Image (cartoon, rainbow, N blue to C red; front, side):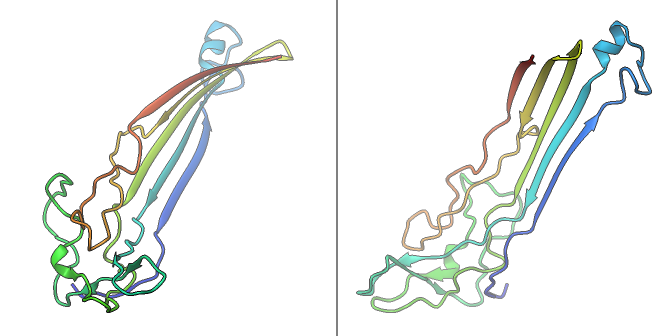
Length: 192
């Protein structure tokens, strides 16, 4: 893989929608005003989906120059793949960045690597949230709203950024998670 510098930003797709279910008075099914109409009517299904490519990884090395900055860029070893391409990634045993592709610059020298590379990005981000909302009206002025919201419904694990400082012994390893596990919440609201 050729080491080509890039400044591009991640590609992002975000979807948000709200769908009023076709049940209850004035709807195609269970459209009576009795008990079944009240039970099945007034439901709304919502969703928010987010998908994006990972952010570019900014590579650094400890500063060996008597300058007022804290980090330098590493040297790139041309012809060596920036990442390992093989099978499933396991953060317990695998490195996201190939340490053989970079070296710390010699004392009192700047590094030769670009700030970031198009093929060297953090893991992609995927997330799906769903909600279910029921509105019940009493007379003209009273409204009862019941809602349930569920975040990261499919319980996807999104890994965090890898260690990007070549001077760190964990260089190339991912040691964090960038999202939270599946969560849910229920709320009841009464308007008068």
